[in-house]
Length: 366
Image (cartoon, rainbow, N blue to C red; front, side):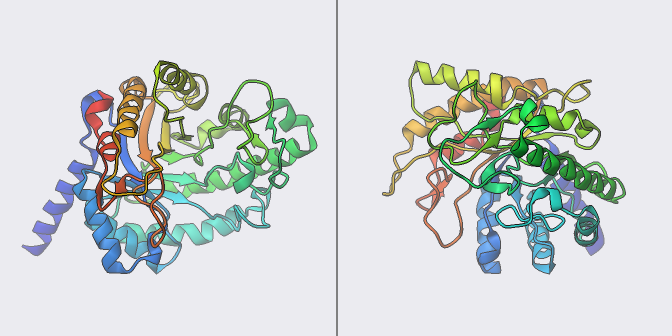
């Protein structure tokens, strides 16, 4: 009887996880959870319970390659949450250190990743997606670039072929694809996650027309579109099911800003996203997006941000309806545990903010 009840519970949870509104074409709407491992198990459970109570069924989180990671994945699953697994370090690659992407070892990745996936599957867990890396097209998280500096520039496809810095970045991208091939092979031989989608690293949103990057860009970058076009020319679309994209729009109100946000999505952020089955391109997972609210007092005045959030959900809607937006994951639920909430956080003043309600409302994608 206990086994039957557990099977029924798992079946109900799977149905809840994947029964998205037809109008949204199955777009997975969720939130980022930042470094939950510094919390006690009791505090992790309290956070996971509050996320589930908000209607969330997908979280983007790292799963550390040890027993703590497996335990967190299991408890998230028990709370009705499926993890979009951000695989942050792989094959020895250190996004913030001295070992660059070009030095990532595919076989080291296999040796560390495959046993953890097996341990997760032994718990009966199905994941929402695999995401290999984070913002590998930006100097701040990819040591292939020269160190961050003023007068940053955006490297072109031609730079990736002929410029010394660009050639080094390209070398890293090609090694990244070798690691991705191992991820696909391990995924394809999994028992429960054989069809779990694989996404590229979430790519930072710095694309723009010719000219210098804005002052707040502290280092060189390769734009989203350029990164994807380079990797596609070297076999990316045979390895992934989706492209990971990050979208951080300006949150000021007004007709001009409304038009600019919509135009940017079409021209830069989501320009390479395609519906499933397309001959050129893949659907996108927006694995980070967010709008800021710098207020520090409670109760939170969130009306302006909420209006822009609803507007942004409406901007995402055509992509969701077309099937070219497979996932939409807000950054973030709160922030690093023990630190003040991020200005973009949805959980503020001990409750889900008005913006949070909008960012998680799948009806707005219809």
